[in-house]
Length: 324
Length: 214
Image 1 (cartoon, chains in turn green, brown):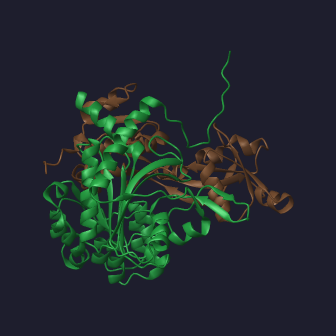
Image 2: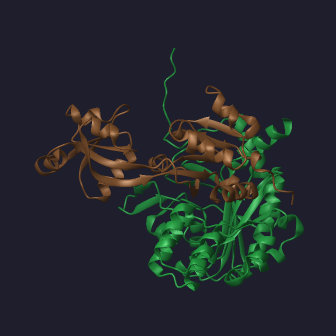
Image 3: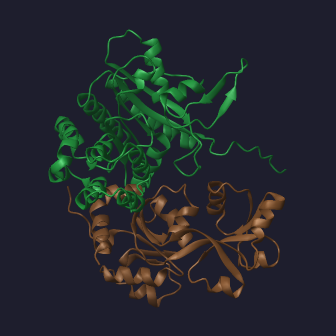
């Protein structure tokens, strides 16, 4: 008899027991680290009011429904915005710092491919009410512990500052309208377009050269020292953060002065996690000052999210590489 | 930190077809010996020099997945695949051609179609480029995707106009087609995988510097 085929929606998939056991090993390893480091696990609804997500300013939701009152609901696109809502409403008077972790699915309207489904499981933490750079250093330490516990050996953490390039542009009197356009090209790392747009601004040659060169700077701590001039002020925050990191975390760091994350809420340090076994980041995060204020509890916060599927792919890739 | 790997540790995706010869010339000029690639037309993978060869439109696919660290392809290909997560590092300048809107000679049939029927029919291999262009210019167009010679479509009345890439304009002229509008100019670009760009920064920067040198 021919089996009947009932497809699941594009960008979703089933997980069967063999794979599930491996995924469980990963999430359990990460969960034990989060719990040990003082991050209590929370659940929030997969569905939020669309207005709540819009207030947070994360990735635009891809799936919307009406409820029985005609309200527009949307599937969350990350956990950072729901946790901001949760902190403001459920912990309105709690004494910071607050530490939360989560293991939750998020939903985005992406082009589905390996490691990037429309429904994807994230593991992450949020540290609310701890100022930079101490808070960022703590979160990077937890991140290192978690990746280590998963069994990844070759991972690196790309570290940048979301405020660095806008600050640099403004210090060279680049008009506000152009700042947005230039940031947009930098998010895509379209350096050809960046060079063309900088050329249109009519800046002095050395200023244009600097503004094109700085976002391409990446490497060890020596690149911060070499930066010099007007860039030295901009990287002072990163230097301060780096000094707080323990040696085993610090040796994983690659500074990336052009690092800009797509989520609009980051205001300070931002980071991505890379592994040579996968062509896309395993996850990332950063520091955000304004997001909780949008929900009425103005506190600085920092967090990260790791995509479990990508950890799994990188782990199997590293195992394959070790056998070869 | 370990010493940076030599440039040859990069896997480079090289486009076959019109861009291939100049791409290999540029690789030779920066010290990658491509003699074997030139002499062997069927082989696709050249592990010794880290070169893989493929259709230009496959280059972003390999680079996005990290199967190649860097690659060379036309801007026309990148514009047609805007969702690919690759970094565009350098305009290499060669392989210059132009994306144009063309119609048959004489009175412009696309203007007539827009005026009387409200919609112009446009044949192209560059579906996304065409959709975006008519949206930007505020015209209603029905895009007819063809795989083979686009020049045939307006001659047979299948479409009112075509959106196509032209280097010299010879093929258009031979088919009595004239360029009505220029959409953009395309050249060869160096692209990189986002993770390789960080983890192999030294090798990629060394390659960039050599490619930039006049």
